[in-house]
Length: 393
Image 1 (cartoon, rainbow, N blue to C red):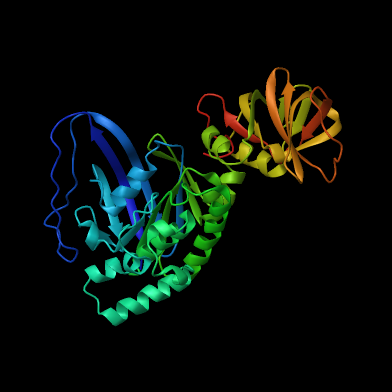
Image 2: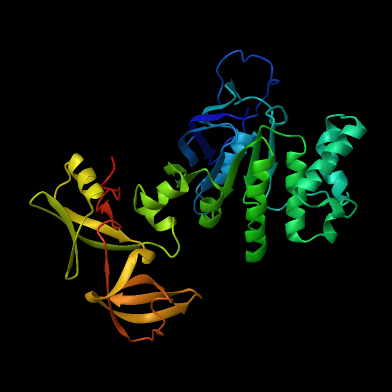
């Protein structure tokens, strides 16, 4: 089993003061009392109020901008960083003061962290040798891991003779060879070029189907988050902003930050008005009034949302060119093969529109005048002050 529960986790890096020395108990020893490391001196809060329950064999992706605390969180789960406050449970057992080696966790790092003087075989076998496992069993497990990751032909090579993608496969092999309950991955693809990243994403998806392990994966790349995760945890400034499936966070972002962070190109955001008239909600943008879809009408009515100024969000792929609608001037046209990304000027504001070249084969030039519209089923409505999505509590 690889069930993980994190309750009210917090990490504070003090500005000064002596480092607190942490002592560990063995995994099977009962704790004498509930223990967490408390830092009372004011410091930098890296992670705060982090709560999540991760099911066995679930693939969780933690995504957010650089410096948001996601790697610090991963290191606390691994035992490489002390937990300032909160509790970490693995399969129901409190792990706050269990040594990293006794947590049945393996970690894959961004920089591979392979031993340069060892062969691929010895790198993968290293954790098993530390466990004093019999040689024949080590050989069997190493070759099984190598086959899964397609590095069998490189077993006698040293890391310097491998490409970046091959080195990362070896690093993953060393992590999975002892079949840990939890596999932690800290931005493992960030050092690879775009083609290799795409290939390795596919390899990781295949890998999780073949091993009985829970994945906690950290990245700043939303594409990795959307393609890999069963659920995504979106972080900012050390806090969780939203947890949900990739489809949920894309279709129903909880606030402006999530709306702008998930989706490429970014969501178009503009200040406008939400109008409630004759028990019907509409949004007004420029000279265009769009009545919202039935499901959005119900959610807003159930929460008794009043007419007000709002931040309106519409994704570029949900905007349509039309003969009537909002006028705009093309400033930049980016040809992307099957689609064109138009950066247009609307009353001094930039709006991005994705156009299907199959239906709109004409080339767009700088200075062209176009008009566009959007449906009431694709808009996102955010509170002007709190930035929260008004359709949800």
